Image (spheres, rainbow, N blue to C red):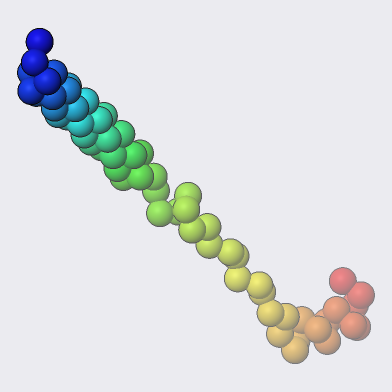
Length: 67
């Protein structure tokens, strides 16, 4: 076996491995994209309930009636 044949085999092997890696990376990317698409906006960003401000009337009523 000559040195060029060995080099060609190594080059072909390298190309095959790169193709395998690219396919694997693409499949992982697609899987991740589908997972992200399946998430809902509400799950990611939860809204906080607004704090109810007590009106002056409620404060006065609370002071007078003790409720």
